[in-house]
Length: 196
Image (cartoon, rainbow, N blue to C red; front, side, top):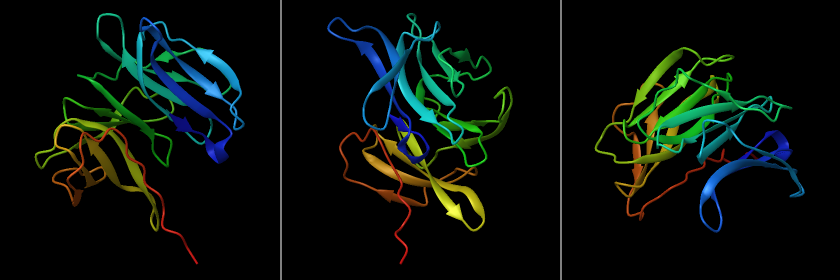
């Protein structure tokens, strides 16, 4: 699930449809929980992770019927998917937009987060390698910085190693901090500290 600016958009990726787990979809809800639209992408069968930027553009990743990973973009106000063909993945993980509007895509098997440059996402600006013995970084969240403004760190949820780790972004490398003793974490979120 991803929530747009001020909670106006709520996007949900449905891995598959019940009861027989056929093709999934992407759904947009209003802030009051009303279903606004259901989007299907021609190259996706399983829909995994979704992210929304401040303009309302939505990225979703998943796999086709053959298990080949794909990433698609749904532009704000649209109901059609644009495949991002340049983004190669071993296995799709979380997707997040950076403060500057670039698209960061997690590859769970490659242990990397590759950042693709807006607006067309046809070239990558960085690849963040997640080291230090982590395993299966399912998804991630940026730590927003006010000074200087931008994304300087990120946290990952590592299902295989049972922990959550903080990394420098985009440098990557070994974790800066780590929270252990978690059993198969799937999601992670970062909240800015309260100000008084």
